[in-house]
Amino acid sequence: MQRDGSEIIQEKLQPALKTLRELSEHHRDDPEYLLLLQRDLEALHRDIQDDAFQASLPEDRQKLFALLKTMERSGGWPSIPRLQLRTFIGLVEQGPADMAA
Image (cartoon, rainbow, N blue to C red):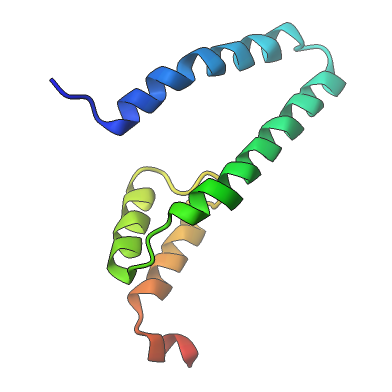
């Protein structure tokens, strides 16, 4: 049976996520350490979002819309609340003339 990309990603991410959870648990009483950990994770998130993810977005409107619908069904973009994603999808559904108005 062939595995899909998300299964492979999860398999590769699990050791790193386990390590991060262990670090946060081990430093549970150290707010300064936890703050640094959160800042590093946020910086990594921004790096992925601003570089690789944005560069990988489809330029074709229909493919972009399909991706946005998939994102909405699966819980939204990690840094965009679901309601904002629905609003963005609504704007993409509108024609270019409608958006200019």
